[in-house]
Amino acid sequence: MNFKITRHPPGVSRTSACVFAFAFCVIFSPALTLPAQTKTVQTAVLEYNFPGRYERQAAQGMAIYGEIALLFNNGGHCRIYNLKTKKKLTEFDLACAAETTHANSASFGIEQPKGAFFPALYVSECFGEGNRRCFVESISPKGPRIIQTLEIKTGGIEERSNNWMTDPANKVIYSIATFRKDSKKHVMITKWPLPPLGKKKIIFRKSDMLDQFAVPIGESGVQDTCIRGDYLYHAFGFRADGEGSQESKNREILVINLKTKKIEKIIDINDSCPLEPEGLDFYGDVLYLYCNGDGGLWRIPGVL
Image (tube, rainbow, N blue to C red):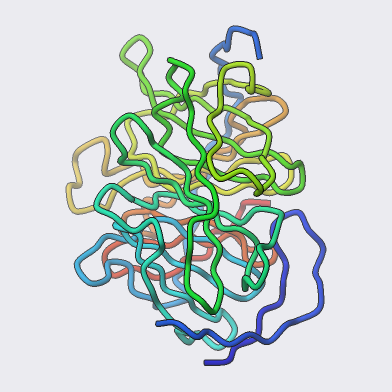
């Protein structure tokens, strides 16, 4: 199957289009920072009717590369769509596919493995007991393969990270873990150097930390993230079926400034999107949300 890919990973300038054929079916004490937040209600707009729940598995992370969207489901299944034609190009199981691979978040790195269609793909394990690893995969005509794993061994909260998210422009990767302080839910955001792909297993220690901070998030389900410029965009919430519970009213996207370490904006989509938020990424200058259930990619205004 032939399709066209315009390479444009986050933070990297556009390169010429390429045609490919798929041949397979610190030492510091982190302090909690009070957010200077502005809440705004926006109308999420359904623009792509791609299924969310697929083969009885819930929708999870999403990564967009040029006009190509990679949609992930629990267990590590991947579907690839062309956003211009709105057609599915192919689908397959990742090399890391397993019951413990939740694929809660996914993003592209800097280096492109030899023969691969995309730069290295970073996928969050999320459910692993004691590991919560990040799998780094190469997607090529020979199929997906794991080329590196990232793991945290610090004895701290960051070991239990749900998400891993690359920032290619700054050659770093962030891990995101949830915890409670004074009965309130927070996320701990930790910055690490993005390792070169030569070494197959990377174990991060406390001495590898470049930065760390935490922000309060309320009683919400932790979903996917993406990074653009100095901002981390983090989706939260569940479907509206259980209306009346606090969790059902928190379908939001937090805009977190990675320099000031504060929440600058909360985008409330409760009234317009009743589905569980899952994947999150930019297509050009537009932020899209991939949802569970009936699914779809929803355009989120008021972001930039």
